[in-house]
Amino acid sequence: MNIKNLQLFLHLCDSKNFSQTAKMMHISPSALSRIIQRLEENVGQTLFIRDNRSVELTSAAKKLLPVASDIVNSWLEVKADLKEDSLQLQGKLKMFCSVTASYSHLPGILNEFRQTYPQIEIQLITGDPAQAIDKVLSGEVDVAIAAKAENIPTKLTYIELDRVHLSVISPLIPPPAIQKHLTGEPDWQSVPFILPESGPARERADKWFKTKKIQPVIYAQISGHEAIVSMVALGCGVGIAPDVVISNSPMGEKVQRLTTESIESLSLGLCCKQSREQEPLLHALLQLF
Image (cartoon, rainbow, N blue to C red; front, side, top):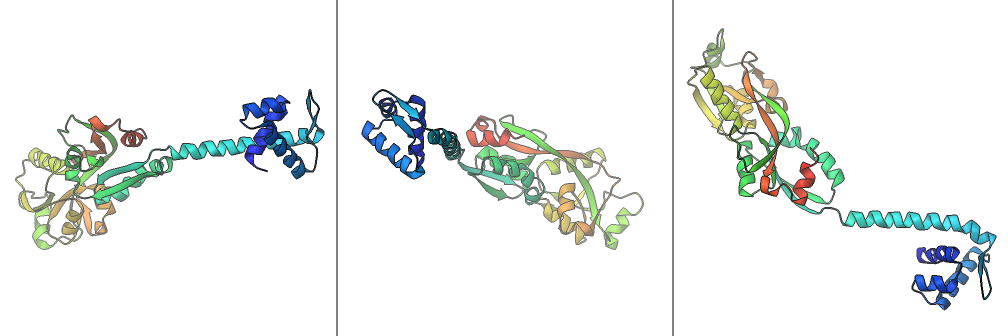
């Protein structure tokens, strides 16, 4: 037996009229009679007692009725779910973040999103976090995990996810040329610094220098943050980097935080163009936060 035949059986049980069921179910009365006959052959029992005026259900039909109803209802629910799945959001979102953010914050962002919208493809681009906002504004990517700049463009929508602290770090065992500047009260005017080339982290570093009236000796300016930890670990100088980068770096155990130094923390969040935030794919992502 098939679902269509069971639906005809259920309708006939309700109407108790072959002509009415045939008309409502868009089938000829003769075809309906043949289907009911085959159904009776399948169950091995007469299902309807009929004469020229009436149709009555037999005890076998009454037993089959709830079973057939459950089967048809279950099928309709599955069919509706499959249809809903086919209508789910589909497409591609281009996302930008730093290498560190791709394993420190991205999994938390995407886990629920991927479960809710499995048919949306995520194209991930990693690079210097200082470029995140520019990539969104230029349309190169749809959304980015970005540190909030002091003068973030008003045309951006920004949702904070976390606060990220920054630290001054030195080699775990500083070479003599660096150690002499860190013994006792640090001589920040003489120690070589390794800094982010640009972006909010560099803004915070420059602000710290200004507050402490330091004219830094800059040994290197790095695109991205991960290489700062590596260069400090190799003894090239003292660096300023986000704690999340330091903690997740494979070279993190070879540097030490100079804990007496406090630098203003960063706001880390999702950003996209304000003019695009109601687009279906972006809206679906943003509404999770």
